[in-house]
Image (cartoon, rainbow, N blue to C red; front, side):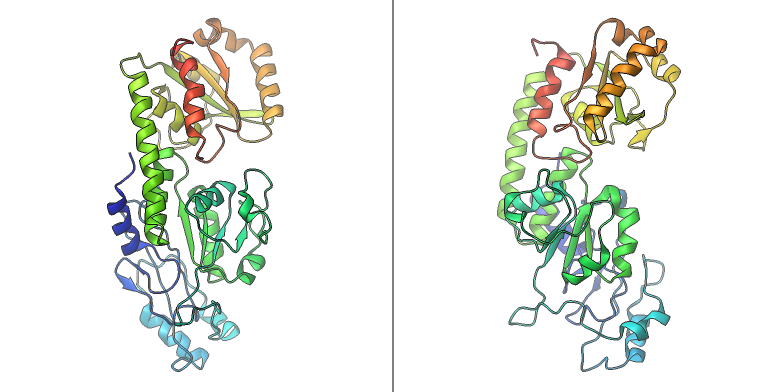
Length: 373
């Protein structure tokens, strides 16, 4: 279950670091932020599951135009602001003379505070922003599942490889993406002195925890509370509908063109199966996906085999059909013998949590519990 809105609000306000005046691990970032920013990871507590319970690092070296008229002043400020051992990344001191003390965020309100200029780097993140009624200044390159209100915005590249020059040119106060890409993208955003926030979209619960934190961070508490209430009401009814039913063991296969891997309960598809009451035969792993040989899969004797696609669903499902028809090992699986192998629709069981999870759970119910379910 997601944390309460009050808890998420308190956590986000104390640790989210997008824009000015924010704090992380107790460190304040004053109005001068934007001048020679070293790093602004800005991951809201509860949004980045890998870092739950750990201190966040938000290191900023900043000075306004009255006090930082030279690169030397910037470097001195950087040293004073640096938090030893907590720094995630820092701009090279040698590079500071090249950047000088230029205000990285020229878009300001009449009172001098920085304007909220957000970029969403995946369709799933953009959909959350739309539900929270947030304006954006940029989105990823995607015509699929992009809310209409953002259709004409500048595009910043693919979710996995945004164009950093385009990102920087939009002067964002915060770039928001899924936490599955945090290891790759956070250092890149730090390199261009852009604040970022990563949302946990590997499960429905994570998505709503992220929504609560975003509501607190971006002054959308009312919208976030309404979304969380809808989720709570739906899940109460759904759990009641499957209460007392036997929980089948499930093998979830994630296909790619030409190959496939096992999806654990830490993946989005796997989390939906767990939410529906299924028992993943690879539960207990800390990985999202695993390379496993078919002998080990067979030894776990799943009641049901579910097949989904990472991308290119038509090709992947054709690959699965050929694999199960031509590879003799599959005919020894009890689930295959009993005809309990199902293909999951790609639009419901993708890589990131979305608001169509009720349809996904309804799709799973007859697969897990029979047509009468």
